[in-house]
Amino acid sequence: MTEDPTPRLLAFADQLRQIRVARTPKLTGRALAELLEWGPMKVSLIERGKQVVTEPELTQWARALGVPEHVHVELLRELRAIRLDQAAWKHRLRRGGHESLQRSFAEVEHDASKIVCVDTAVVPGLAQTPAYARAVFEKNRAFRGAGGDTDAAVAARMERQQIIYDASKTIEVILFESCLRSGFVPADVRAGQIDRLIALTHLKTVRVGIVPLDAELPVPPLHGFWLFDDTTVTVEAFHTEIATRDSDDAKLYTELVAALWQVAKAGEAARTLLQRVLGDLASAN
Image (tube, rainbow, N blue to C red; front, side, top):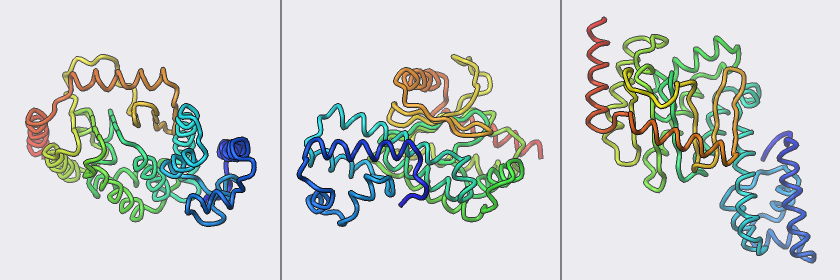
């Protein structure tokens, strides 16, 4: 269920209702729900924006109504954009804290077949240790003055990480070496985080890349981003989260990911780099 539907969600919900009525004028929402083996009120809730349909449900709905494939694809794109809107930290942080934001983002990840996360300053959430995640949440809480649910947020982020073991998905994590050398978390936390990254490089279900400090970069590393299914991009800024599904934007970020993989260290080369950073950290302390 969703509280306070956004105008975008309401417009999407009404579009679904109009499509149903146009394609099957005599088929009521209750009858469609029965056909789909859903609860009797589910279609009504979805068409009023009181419940957000999932991607599998939308596909089931489209097939039942004989919706043309190009329309189905556009509806899926809009649904993904709406889910990203709902995950925007500014809205979710005020309503439910960091935990709510983590769970919303987990829903987007669950629906995606391919997930790419790139970060220039912080180890991406899918790769963080509990201690590192706690430091990130506490720093954000102090700076933004919101999200005092650190324990629950850390637990939700760790739960999100189960997705990296899902062999049905393609998951790529690219981070810059500078993320590992940043002093915004204690040295012992950074050391534990590096150990975690070394372990992740051995997994077959996730591809980990480290961009060295001295790498010749294709473009300046202005910010990190997430790319879902090569169609949707989301970028977190200090004041909000920005999402786009414009095809030109998605193509730009897809090309950037490919360029970063040209300079990123992976596999044994990544482990060598990580061990070097770990050694430098030990020497400094």
